[in-house]
Length: 482
Ligand SMILES: [Ca+2]
Image (cartoon, rainbow, N blue to C red; front, side, top):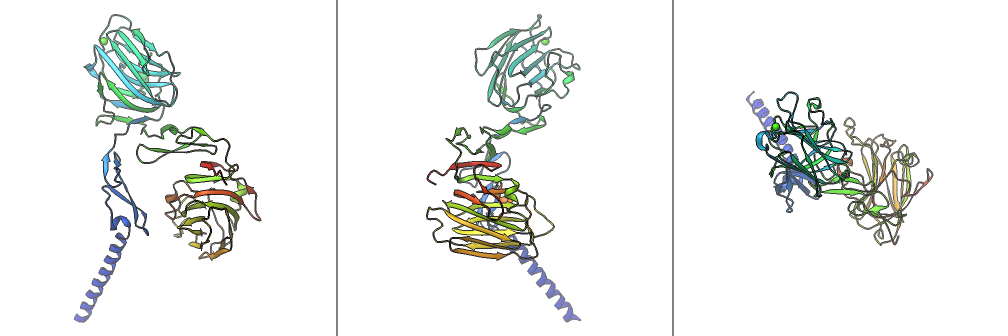
């Protein structure tokens, strides 16, 4: 009996030890766990190579040492909708004789309330201050109790550009300056000369526009980023503890499409920075430079991609067969060349999402696919793939059997399980896929660098005009000596 008890205890101890070791090994398996100097957040980039990246919490940004976090500028409010507002403490009696409002913003609409404080039908005083945009003109209205002043800017402002407004009054006399112009002068009616304010100060719309004076013709909020509000030389804290926000976002370089021109797509990168994905035919930081002609041979420089949705292309990729020839000139030894897959992770199957991908990995050409029953991989190395010439890659899949070849090198693989048909989201990418790490579930993180000359679907579809038949083209340049 006693022997059995001791044996049970030993077994239990052993089981616990095995379980503990398994958990511990699992915990320390990532690069972050093994070695990380990250001050706040560490993210494993590539567990095999030990690559990791440091990130910082909101309100901080990564120092140039890539490990420590430094306090970053507090985010500014972005009024996103016609009923957005930021509620700030009352100015009360700070501004009775003189009121100087300096406001910097980037409006994304040309009509609406910018700033309002004062009068409501509930308060005892008629005094108010109101700044609006009306058809692109800044209008400054105020009432000291005996009738309003209305001062309208001469110039109209442009949408989505930074403007600075300086609206001041001294006694009944008011001046409105926009973007440092010479200004327009006005005078309030009657004899009242002191501004007696009650109630909150609002950026954007008053939460109850029906309580505003009838002069406040605009019951909607202007939209856009508010950078700074200074009242009588005191900068207001737009993120203070008493501040309330309603439908307000943070300003970012990509707010409202950002600075990208000619249809470029703005992507926020690290805090305060952005990247423009330029459509075919345009390049430079903000896609502002038109290329002489749309490149016939697509050059990828590490941040570009082409996306196709045309049925004539997607039907040659998904289903029972995938078959195409792609002529490439790689300029770096790693990067995703081709991707088509499902959008969402099918949590039920346990085998990851379905996809087919062609990539370069340290000089090795790889074809990887998953038909819902596990990954299959073909590795092919070709001695002259990086000789600066074009090489034609052949990809062929019939059901669960696929082959990859370039020149005289080739290989094939059969995917595990019973999967036969490939289901994708009917999008086919060349060069990269946006949010690559997440979309490919960590399989790929590097974009293709090099040139793609031709893409031919054998036995299936068309000769694709790479730079004509796309649905989205981002940062594609011309391969000049292609
Ligand atoms: Ca008054």
